[in-house]
Length: 515
Image (cartoon, rainbow, N blue to C red; front, side, top):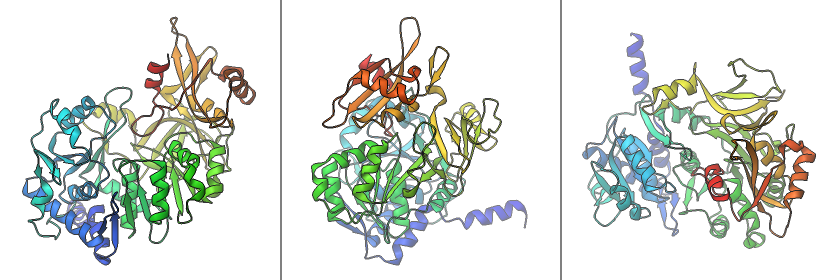
C-alpha cells in the first residue's frame, strides 16, 4: 500500500468529535444531557436523535463539505445540537457573536462564504438588521421564527440515525474570529483533526460525571467546555447569559460541578449577597482566564469555593496553552504576578528574542507556541498566516518569560507597549500591581498620545465596594512596587470596564470614552 493509500485509510478511520459524541450519548440514552434555561431536561437519546436529524436535514439542503453554515444563535439546546449537526454533515461552522455590531457581522457572513444562515429564537431580532446589510443564499431557523423555514420541523421528517460518509480530519471544522476591536476581525481556520486533538488533550477534572454551567456564549470557551463535558458523559446546564444571582441559584439547584468565568464575572459572584446563603459544595472546578485577575480576589475565591480554581491561558490561534492548578496560585513572578502556568499536554512553548532566537529561562521575549488545537491558518489571508506561523510555531504576539521550572509569566502584548522616554511599559505590568491594592476591584491600563505625539500612561479603575482611594495614592502604590516611570499620569475612576467580545479590556473604547 502506498503512503497516499495508507493516509486515506487512516483518514477514513478518523472519528470526529461530533461522531464521538454520538457514541457517548448512545451508552446511556435516558440520562439527562442538557438542562435548558427554563429547566426542561433533554436526554442523551433525544439530543443524539436531534443532532442526527438536523445533520440529515442539512444534507438534504445540499449542505456538506467545503460549505459554510453561520449560526446567529444563543445558548439554546437547538443551537447546541446544531453545533454538532453542522460538523456531522461535514460543513464548516461559523458563529456570529452577539456582541458584534451588524456591520461587523455582515462582513463575517460575506467573508466566510456563508451558504446557510441559521437563526434561533434568542437572536431572531438581529436577523433583520443583518440581512439589510448582506445577502445570504439561504436562511433557516432552529425552531419557529417568523418568516423563516423551520429546519427543526423539517428535520423531524428524517431518520434519527447518523448520515453517511465520514469526517475528514483535514477539512475545516470551523472559522473562529478574533474580537476585531482594532479593525476587521481576523478569521482563523481550525480543522476537525486539530480540534479533536485539542479535546483529547484536555484533562478537566470536574466531577464524575461533570455538570457544566454554560452561562457565557457557546461560541467561545463555554462551547469547548460543553464539548468536553458531553464527551466525558456529563451534562450541560444552559443559561442565556451571565447574571450572578441566577448563576448561584443554578449551582445549588442543579448541583453544578464546573464553571468557566472571566475574572470580572468571578468578582461579581464574590460580591453577590446570595453567596453567603448558597450551597456551592457541588463545585469541583472553576476555570477562569481571559484577563488579569486580582490576587486578593483569587484568595477570597479559594476561601469561599475551596481549592477548585484553575486558570487557562491561550489564544484564538492556539486554544489552550497553559494551566495553573489550585496549588500553583502561590507561584509569583518578579513583579508579584501569578504565573499563567505550565504547558498543557501536547503544548510546546519557547520564548524568543527579536531575531527569533530562543532565550534562556528568566529572559523576556515573544512567546512562540505549538499546540494540539492551533489554527490551520487565517482565512483568505496567506500573508498574515506567513507572518504568524513560522516553521510550525505560532507567534503569539505576547511578551513573557519562563522560570527555571517551566512556569510562564506574561508581561504584555508586543504591540501594546506604551513608549515612554528612556523605555517602554506594558499595560499588564501596571495592571498586575494595581490589582494588588485592596481598594481596586478592576482596572485597565492604556496609552494615550498628546498633541505632540508623546505617549502617557492612563489607568481606568473600578473601586472595590466600600473603598475610596485617590489618584495620588495609586501612583504611590505603583511607584513603590515598580518605579515612578510606571505610575499612571492620569487615573479615571469608572463604574465598569468595557470589554471586547472575548472579555478583555477594550482599550480603544476606553480611549474614546475617557480622553
